[in-house]
Image 1: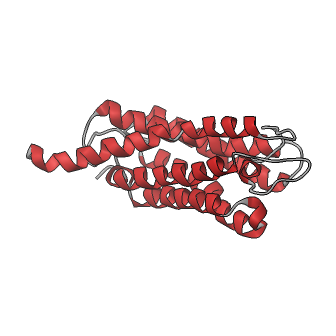
Image 2: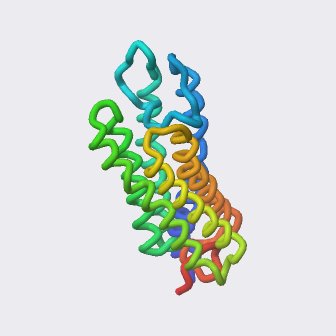
Image 3: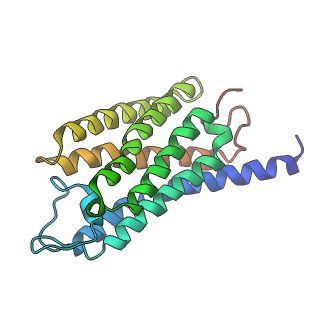
Amino acid sequence: MPSDQLLTPLWASRAGALALLMRPAYIATEFVVAAATTGGYSFVDNTVSELGVVGCTMQYCSPEHGLMNAAFVGFGALLVLGSFLLARSLGPPVTGLLVISGLSSMATGLAPLDEGTALHTLAAAPLFLAQPAALIALAYQSWRARPVPARMLLSTGLVTSLAALAFVLNGDHSGAGALERLALWPVLIALAGVGCIYLRDGRCAGVPGSGLSVER
């Protein structure tokens, strides 16, 4: 195939990989926002959504709630963008699940917890369902070509699925923050690892043998 025909898919693959690699920076945003809160904030017991509450009470306030909600939107947009750009390699099922996850994250940032609990919960729910499903699906389709990364993706998908279920069953009780982060943070790292594979291979998305590409 002529090199000029490979140029656009190659650019898309690298740009999509970079988008996934940027997303773990979201974790740092949580620490920055949490450090600015007043009234005490626990990463073990308090949920991520509490960092984005707009209003303040006598007991608690998150002055940097705008940064947190912007992070939900921005890093969700990176997931949508990265998924579209890597769609030829990820395949329709995984791409669709990751796009849903990214849109869910964006919607969460646009619907802060204290401005409508039901709407916020509805916006966030797809994220906890679609992300683990995407990892498991990607592990399945890349098992033969990349067994080691596939096992890691499968393990992460299963762990985050169980953590998400435990988070829902736990409600607002002790440990809610830890369970929620166990359901979310590992996905950021796992997908960044996928991005690393695409960048390291330096090949065109969709070309046989290129990283975690779907077998054609």
